Length: 200
Image (cartoon, rainbow, N blue to C red; front, side, top):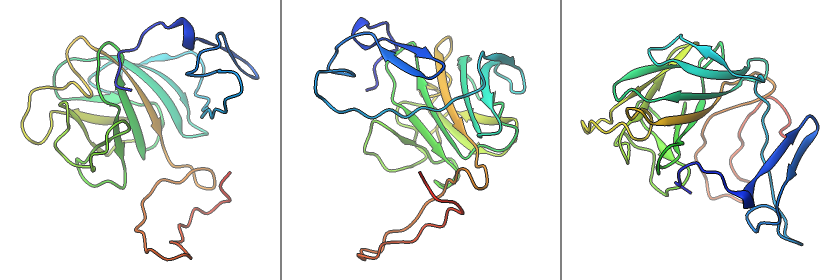
């Protein structure tokens, strides 16, 4: 969903050292007899202020696992975001928390300036539907957010003035994680994608 972040009693959960507990019987997460999947990544605990970029961020980073969670307030201009990974990111997902906005995706294999969306069927491109893109990954400490290549001044996807955002960032760790792309071949044998480790 592209909904604004909100408090919703029917979707609340509590985090514990060994797992999570749903605090409701909502159909979104815990309906009787239904099956669900969860994807969980541990970052670095309590977030700390990061001033590596032109936009101050709050970052919780697990550099060993190549994962960080970032929050920040938009400035309405081109800028750089400190990600805390200590290496160049391979994949970032960003969502505006304070307003309705698509889930913007930047992936290292997508090509220069190209972005996609978790909640849309659009191809990866440089237009930045809704305004604003992550232009490229080029630094072990920051990534760049800009207006889209069509010249719009709307930074809604990544950096609208006064809006709040969350970003989930991954960097490749050899033997642990891999980020890339492949081209299908319509064969029953499929396309082999080399990872260097057994996926789980």
